[in-house]
Picture 1 (spheres, rainbow, N blue to C red):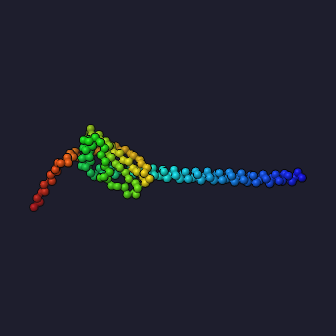
Picture 2 (cartoon, rainbow, N blue to C red; picture 1 turned 30 degrees about the vertical axis):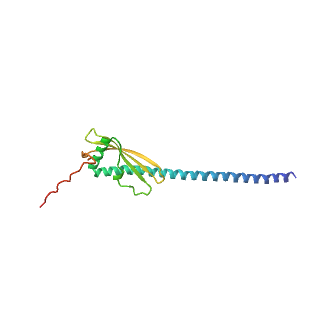
Picture 3 (tube, rainbow, N blue to C red; picture 1 turned 90 degrees about the vertical axis):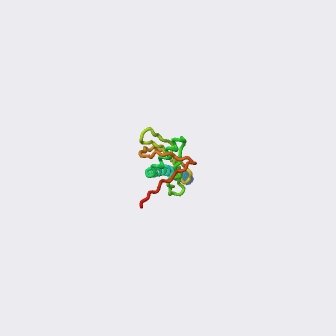
Length: 166
């Protein structure tokens, strides 16, 4: 009779062991699912932050490319900055980004003109699809700018004479 009692105890112990094992497996599966979802959210956040960074770098590169082919315009913008002593927005003259939802704002925020080569400080603020922002500053060494005077609003600019070729 003692043998039958121990068999009943073994049957009850195996049921409790299986239930505990199922509880542990459920907890492990839930923890794994939570970890995977939080990783995907942080991965998406990193991707959007990278988009904002790339937008701001694109703004700086676009400003550099524009400055390469518009030296007289940059001379006028530098003169405007030196007279007003406040940032000049360059975004309207730059090409917009072709990516939907990504934009940038570019500002001329500083000019150092002691030598013949100017040091120009550019601030670019990029924005990703979800509105996350990143700002970058670049200091460019620029040579060969034209010295120009920005005309006043009421000042008329005379047209150059047309030469006769005949």
